[in-house]
Amino acid sequence: MTTKDIGPKGTVQKSAEGALDFVDERSGVKTGARWFLFRNIPAGTSWFQTLGFTAMVVFGMQAITGIILAMYYVPDTSGGAYASIQRITEEVTWGWMVRGMHKWGASVMIIVVFLHMARVFIWGSYKYPRELTWVTGAVLLMFTLFMGLTGYLLVWDQKAYWATVVAVNIFASAPIVGPYIGDILRAGPEFGPSTLSRFYSIHMLVIPAGIAAFIGLHLYFIMRLGISEPPWAKRRLRIERDEEDARRRAAREQAAALPGTVTYPAGAPTGAGGDDR
Amino acid sequence: MKPADKRAYDRDYAQAKKTGKPFFPYAIFKDTVIATLTVLGIIILAIVVRVEVGEPVNPATTDFVPRPEWYFYFAFELLKIFKNQDVFTPLIMATFMVPNILIILLVVWPFIDRGPERRIWKRPFALGLTVIVTGMLCYLTWMGANSPAGVAKGGLPVSGLDEEATKGMGVYLANGCGSCHMVAGVGAPGPGPDLTNEGTKGWDNAKMIAWFKAPKPPMPSYASLPPAELEALATFITGLGTTYK
Ligand code: HEM
Image 1 (cartoon, rainbow over the protein chains, first blue to last red):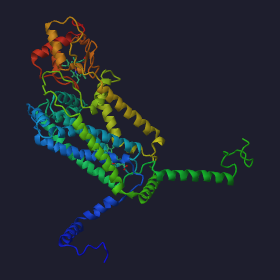
Image 2 (spheres, rainbow over the protein chains, first blue to last red):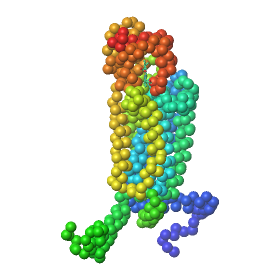
Image 3 (cartoon, rainbow over the protein chains, first blue to last red):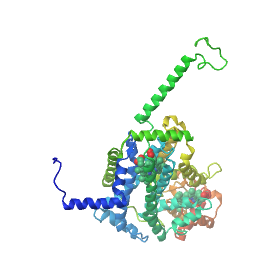
Image 4 (tube, chains in turn orange, cyan):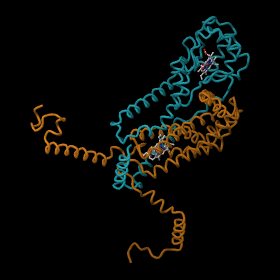
């Protein structure tokens, strides 16, 4: 008997393990989790590669604070929306905090997504085989910006109202399809009660669903292809140095074996040494 | 990338993975640190800076500043650059062409830049693009943050105003026209044209009111203003540069 042995397994422990095995046999969660957690990533993976995950976490935070806000928010243009925002900010317990987090979270998410994109761009991480990861990311960027646009109106104060009027007018000024896009966004030719309901529904149902779906696709590609290695990871630099050395060595050997043929262009005198030109 | 380059990359990446480290705990640790710091930052902003409740919406009057959230300032500033409406800088450039070109470039970029090189200093074009686009965005956002709030509280430096025109000027100021237009040097330099000499175009009040009710975007419609205010505003605008200077 070893000291690690703590005696026969209790009924509880046995049935717990049994239940887990039962689920794993049918769903593969244990195996899947083990594959997910313990698969290898390149050793040089850096701090800059945390920004995508951070964007995801901030999106999760926006979802949670957004759900709480939706419990108190009233999309009513005849004063109800404004009053409910006032109530959330001034009366509801921790309401100011939840609204503050949602509002600042929106700005931070845009900054984080932009930085994430900059890192992917500068590292050339969108190159083969990750082109489609980039395309799904580009869609996510547009969704994120659109979240900002539709959310801004919901507060229904002067600044938000007029800024959104102008923004929608910009969409509406596009040739051919513009007027239709304007009507779709406004839910009619004028800004009014249905505009607010429409923005509310787009902001809390349509785009979040789109973002969730595209984050899923984005993550699928990332897990399938693996996270890229930093172009200046130690391993890469070593390989590049070795390649450079090998190239130099080859050139030197060639020059030594066949004097003239490497250092002189065709037609130049050969066999006359290396330094009389 | 040529097929040979692709195979070379696949081989190199497989090698990187083989000599790599497990996702848990190495990547998870870094991810958790940065994400936690970011969320903490948001909470601190929410506690320290707070959110305010602005003035309630009033589609008819009260001064407003049609300013988007800061992350759309760049778009608003673009409108100002292309406000001149001449053949070289038509407004459609800012509202349609430039944004769509940027969006299309963004989406198809990996299919344009397909070389195997990943080190930024060996990709001078990509490096230049990074610097120029980031610089432009920062510059335009900064411009937007510092643009005049628009509404000139003290009135406009225009003389010769009669009673109706004074009322019209009040409507002009109260509705934030000055955050898109300039009169006699007061107001924002765009996206709308300078209205200092608007009267010289010879529009009558009816034509002007029709414009207020159904202007070309991005100017918002003022159809909800009371008729008397529209009339006074039209009198004021159509006299600018002729009767009122
Ligand atoms: C809501 C927004 C986004 C979320 C939640 C997100 C999430 C992620 C995550 C978790 C990763 C794993 C590696 C890392 O954290 O850096 C990643 C990688 C990646 N992202 Fe995003 N992303 C978003 C937006 C974007 C945007 C706007 C782009 C570019 C247009 C983009 C392109 C990529 C690419 C190409 C990779 C693979 C990089 C590599 O393998 O090194 N993503 N993303």
